[in-house]
Amino acid sequence: MLKIKKQIIFVMLYFFINIYIFFHQAFIRTFNQREAYNILISIFSTFMFGTLFQKIKYALLSFIGVLFLTAFLTIYIVRLPIDIFISSLSADIATIYIAKNIFTFMFFIYVPLSFVSLFIGLYFSQYFGE
Image (tube, rainbow, N blue to C red; front, side):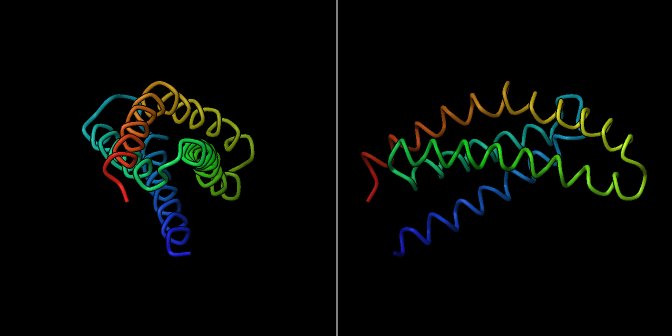
């Protein structure tokens, strides 16, 4: 029971870390210092994610589910105030721009590095874990 609570708490923490990273990535066009820090945070948090789950099936399903849920929720969080306060056309244009930035970062930088760190974390959990 304690392990399940620990996993749920860490999945929520990983979810909020990803929202932070994707929210910053939604407005960044170029590679800068903040993006480098975001990549380091994502590598470390995904490594810890892998060490906690210890089984590849649960780790991959949780990782992919949290990743896409975070991306869509971040787009919604950015779109909603624009839709309410400006117009729906502006929100559509902003959604296209933000989705392009988030999914480009996610598929070309975040996912490859996270898969590597996830499997390293799974390896460490098998040999050095509980």
